[in-house]
Length: 269
Ligand SMILES: Nc1ncnc2c1ncn2[C@@H]1O[C@H](COP(=O)(O)OP(=O)(O)OP(=O)(O)O)[C@@H](O)[C@H]1O
Ligand SMILES: [Mg+2]
Image 1: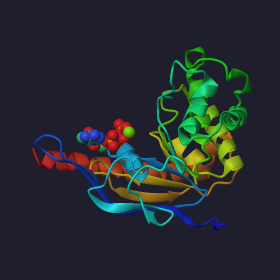
Image 2: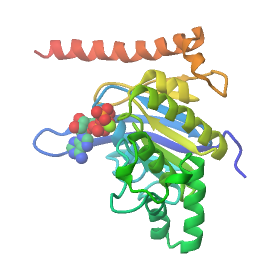
Image 3: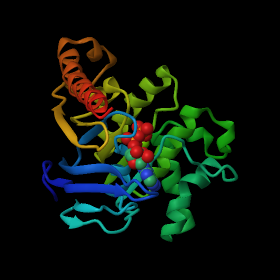
């Protein structure tokens, strides 16, 4: 068994240049960090700084132009859906399939037998509190429920790593807070390693062990903030002095970087 502090994801000098059209876009530059097994790590940064690109590279879906991604010490060259699940902002469920069939779908692709698939889907639905909705179609559910189905689908193959790209971005604030609590509940039961992208500094701190802060394009890691807040976390923690201080620290990193980007923009006029 791996020790709790084993490194499961590592990036070394990772870079990405998109070469479409005449001017290449340097999306990421020299990204190096490590994620401990079983930890909850968030990534925050301004729009367009390369967060989704980084997530797709961790999943082996987008190749790097420099540096490398390692999962369990091996260089990632292609997707490994049995090990890594991705959950996007939109639930991306198949509208013509029932909720349970949507959850079974990745298992079917893996070749799992029908009876086992059904049991697994039922267990995942129970985990996300939707046991009574397996026979419904996605359009019969609310946005929050659909997102819970997509989390259940991501958990179904029992991956060690869950990559989540703004999974609650399309939800109203109240549902979003509730989903955050639920995700922490699922995480504490399953002890997956979670890599979570969000625009919300509060959400990042509330959920995470570590918050990675990225700069304006080209994306670089400008801070690694440890969220040393007690668990299990309740909503009250957001009002604490500790939480406020950590949030301020992240805000300073982001706003300093934005000021610098604006100054550089002015200088080049
Ligand atoms: N397939 C692609 N081809 C060309 N350029 C791309 C591609 N994907 C992303 N980019 C560019 O790379 C940069 C980073 O994009 P990315 O989507 O990773 O940012 P992001 O931080 O996830 O933004 P947001 O917070 O808005 O989701 C942007 O300038 C974007 O235009
Ligand atoms: Mg994005």
